Amino acid sequence: MAQKKSRLSSRIDTLRQALMLVKICRVILLIYTFLCFLFWILNCLEVDWLYKFNALFILPYKFVSTFYKVQGVSTDFSLVIIGIITLVLAFSLNSVSEAITNKIVELEEQLENQRERRKRQLKAHKISNPVLGNDSVPESNSVMPTVEPLETEPPKLVFIITNHIHRIKRQSTDLELTFQQVEVWNQRVNKRLIENFNSSQPIQKGYYRKNLFLVYKEFNQTDNIIYYINPTLDSIIMEFKKYGIEISFSYVLSSISNSKELEKELDCMDTVLSLNFINEPVVTQRFKINYDKKANPMYYVQLRGEYNLSKNLTISNRQSLYTLIKKQQGE
Image 1 (spheres, rainbow, N blue to C red):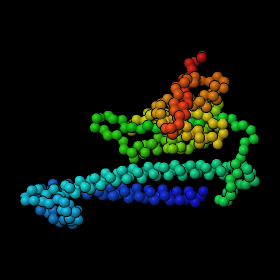
Image 2: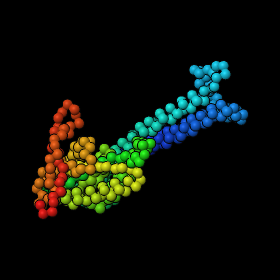
Image 3: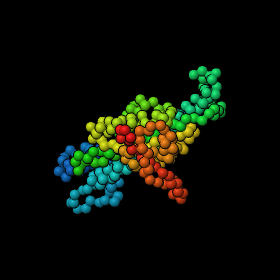
C-alpha cells in the first residue's frame, strides 16, 4: 500500500511539473505571436532598426520560406504566417494542459481513496488488537483482519453532492468559464462545503468520482441534517455570487446498513447525480424504507419517478426515486 501511494504521489508531482512546463511554453508562444504581428506592422511602416531583431525570426523564416515565396514587390506576410502558426500551437497546448489537469484530479482522487482505505484498515487492526498503542503500526506485509459486528449496525445516512458552476453573464460579451477556472472554483466551493458541514459531525467524508460525500452515524439524524442543508447551500450560493459566479447543486440522500455497502451505494448515488436534479432533495428507495420507520418525520417522501440507474446500456435497472416535501406546521 505504501509503495503504491508513493508511486502515485510521484506521478502527480511529475504531472504537475509537466503542467507547469506546458503553461510556460504556452505563455512564450503567445508572447512570440504578439511580437510577430507587432514586427510585421513595424516592417510595413519601414522602421529602420528592425534588422537588429532578425535573429528572433531566422529559423521560422527559413521554415516558412519552404512553402511561401515573396514575389515581386508584394507585402511580405512571412511574419503573419509565423504568428498564426505559434498562435495555433499555443491553443493546442491549452488542450494538453486541460488533459494533464484532468489526469492530476483523477490521480488525486485515487490517492485520497487509498488514504481513506489505509485509515479504515488501521482502525480495524487496532480494534482487533487493543493491546497496540496509538503509535503502533502493523507491518506492511501483514494482512489486515476484518472485524465482524457482533450485532446488526443501525442504519447510517449517506449524503453526496455535486456543484454546477457558471459565470454570471452581465454582458453579452462575457465568456463562459474555462475548464481550469471551473476546477479552481469547484475546489473553493468544496472547501466551503466541508467547512460548513463539519459542524454537522459526519463520521466519514471524502470524494467519490470528484463528488463530495458525507456519512452520518445514525439515520435518526436525518431531519436535522436535511434542515441544515438548504440554508447552508443558500449561503454558499450568495457568497460566490459576489464574485460573479453562479452555483447550483445536485444532491442525493440514501442509507446503508454497514460500512461494507458504502462504495456500492455511492456508485448508485453517483448515477442519480448524473440525472441533474438541480437544487432539489432526491432520495433513494433505501432512504424511504428507513425514513418510513421514523417517528414524527418532518417531511413527506413523494415519488419522483422511476429511472434506469444502470451504467450498462444493455441492462435495465429501473429504480424509484423520491423527493422530500416539508410538512406544514400542525400536520
